Image 1 (tube, rainbow, N blue to C red):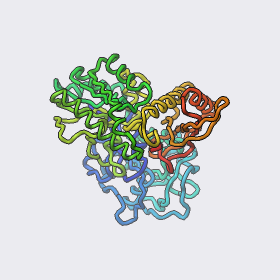
Image 2 (image 1 turned 90 degrees about the horizontal axis):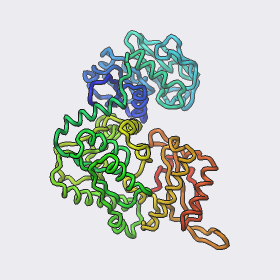
Image 3 (image 1 turned 90 degrees about the vertical axis):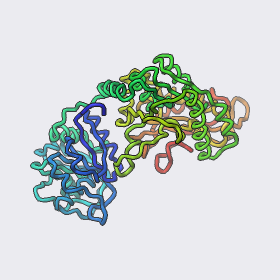
Image 4 (image 1 turned 180 degrees about the vertical axis):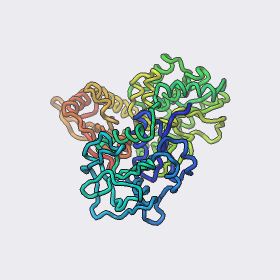
Amino acid sequence: MSKAHEKVVVLDFGGQYAQLIARRVRDLRVYCEIRSYKTDPEELRGYKGILFTGGPNSVYAEGAPLCSPEVFKLGVPVLGICYGAQVMAQVLGGKVEASGVHEFGKTQTSFAPESPLFAGVPESVCWMSHNDYIAEVPVGFTSSAHSAHCPAAAMENLGEKLFAVQFHPEVEHTQFGNKIFENFLYSICGCKGDWEMASFAQETVEALKKQIGDKKVLCGLSGGVDSSVAAMLVHKAIGKNLTCIFVDHGLLRKGEGDLVEKVFQKEFDMNIIRVNAGERFLQKLQSVSDPEKKRKIIGEEFIRVFEEESRKLGKMDFLCQGTIYPDVVESGTGEAAVIKSHHNVGGLPEDMEFEGLVEPLRDLFKDEVRRVGIELGIPEALVWRQPFPGPGLAVRIMGEITQEKVALLQDADAIFREEVTNFGLERDINQYFAVLTANRSVGVMGDGRTYGVTVALRAVTTTDFMTADWARLPYDLLGKVSNRIINEVEGVNRVVYDVTSKPPATIEFE
């Protein structure tokens, strides 16, 4: 962060929702960080509040992750969630036991109206997910919520400002989850809510000016939202001292390379080198069908192209990357991971020397990056660009890749994306794209027999991309897309829609 904001901290006990908790907090305009449950309590004194995540363990098991009792003596309000609630009970002398009846899913829950955590929260549905339960609350605590099988669905010690909930307020299925977070942050922690994207952009540009001075920065620009917003922030700070290398490997979506060049070079006057390397990549991919080999070839070739172009520029002092907050949080522990030196530019060679990294987005989640992009005036077509794999369409073409297949898929995918927008659903679906399958089938067009390829459509809804559900698209939309692809894209005679969730499938096909 570029200036001192009020902040709270999420201590991660290995729960799958650590990042979701932090995002819910930030949505309420309070800056939030994720740290390990092992964090020294003395390092937590500067926070306005502390939240404990859930986790997969039993608190009474040998070696179970538990925080130091000193955390509860800091005078900083604490909210324990699910496993985090049981940690609070266990560490402070309560009793946690295996539950005779496990609660999973939507559960009707009643709340104590006098509790400051549940002010304005009526009896309602919460999302439970636990095998254990708090059998006895610690001394000084009272139960403040209950469900049919959980007598202490929440507990609190008002004098010490310690609160715990057995359910998950961060998931959408908990009807008044946001209200509970709001009560904790504003009423209990005393936060004012000073975390805004407009101020973030302005403060970050000023901080970058101080960090970089008159030195030169190199950026690998993919046209994705992360690298685009990072590059724009640096450009506003140092202008022509930023050079962006945009490697077009010929596997982008239809018109995307031209859009990136037009926006950043012509509209924003950024210093961009576009490398049209499509033929080079296709030659390397000739006769390759295995998806892992495709990824490896594209990654290695990307490095070579980037190397060749960067050496023409002479010495560059800093490397700009679009690293975002999920990239620097270790999965499951909440401890900061080693910064990825290859986050946006395909894996840079180790012998490329820089004074340091410039990572203006490393404190932000993806949705926050998009909001900064809008603040900076980047067109929505780029800010709301669909998530796109580094190897591009290579992993959406089954089997061998040819120029003809790339062009066919670009056309089919463009039609799908255009019609989703025409139906006003582009913001409701988290990812949607077309896939060129390896299947060929018999069809009839006009009075003749065809033997054409099958295009699959994929659309999913998700909050974290760890899991995803297939999107229930309107039949009229699917019908129009199918009709247009078959009539407008030569060689396609069948269109199918994928109705598989993740798991068991992945979002991408390869």
